[in-house]
Image 1 (spheres, rainbow, N blue to C red):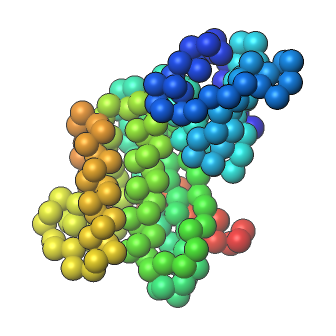
Image 2 (spheres, rainbow, N blue to C red):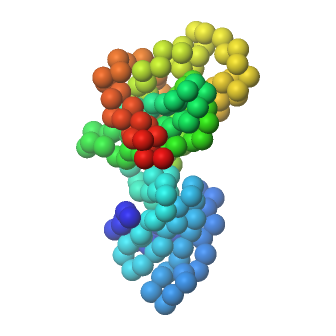
Length: 197
């Protein structure tokens, strides 16, 4: 359960500016509470506690990081299609900003690769990063995002459009294919999520 030391009034303003609805607290000690991206933020004097299953997007709105981030993402599917999961890691100059892995139901490996990238881009945008450098080990994903390969599958085409729309939230972006060992942590997070399911 992340605790963000901050001025709760400023945190409230950041949430409202991001279009998040903020409500009154449930107790005398709670200043306010808000829900976003499947998580809940509860404000107290001088801090905000974030709780829930996926806290990264809400944390991102509350923290003021900006700058450049390296994004590593990976999707995994057992059965292709079959049970699937995603994993991602965001790294800036100070180290790992956030990382997570979660199951996404039934999908092909390519669908899971796209879903991992989409989720990671949403988190990076919520953190306020202005530049994103994407590193993935899925050559198909890289070439389709760059427009070097056609996206014939209708579902992948829709996911590609979503990725391109999310990339517009950044001042600058790049995407490159890296060997699997460079993307090892994102792969591990996706597979751990499948193992734990």
